[in-house]
Figure 1 (cartoon, helix red, strand yellow):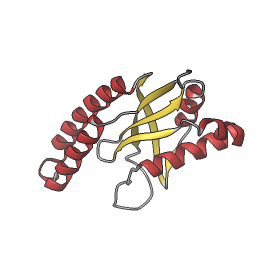
Figure 2 (tube, rainbow, N blue to C red):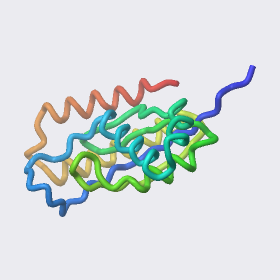
Figure 3 (cartoon, one colour):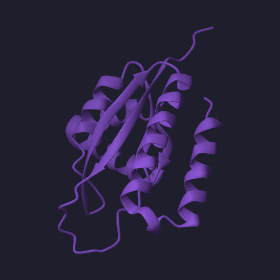
Amino acid sequence: MVQFKNRYLVMEVLVDPNRETGDADPIVLSGFNVTKAIKDSIQLNFGECALASSLLSFQVKYVNPITKICIIRVSRDDHKKIWAAITMVRSIGRCPVSFNLLDLSGCIQVCRRKALECDETKFELYKLLYGDRVTPEIKKSVKNNFERIKALEN
């Protein structure tokens, strides 16, 4: 039996602080928004055929809207093409963003550890930056995200 080989990308979404949307609300980062932006970039830069071939294994496995860390699963054959398309994403919705690759691995366990480490570090920085404005709801949301990342499997 042949096993289907995947690659897992741990990505950090960098939101442009000088964005000119005029909205006071920060970007709502969700799996749907990230997936749509990446699919649009694949289609724009590589065409419909590349989009169709990459959709077989493409999945956004995890997104943390507070720390802006996500895990993306792609096929081993298409990971360079999708990585290139991800670097060409310039906006999610109307908010300018860029992606930074933190880790690339062939197994989810290694990416899970790296993403959890990055999430914890970024949340500590978030607490230092916002101080008293970190509400119990935000803390609960982040704790739930930490539990979700610990439970990730194929």
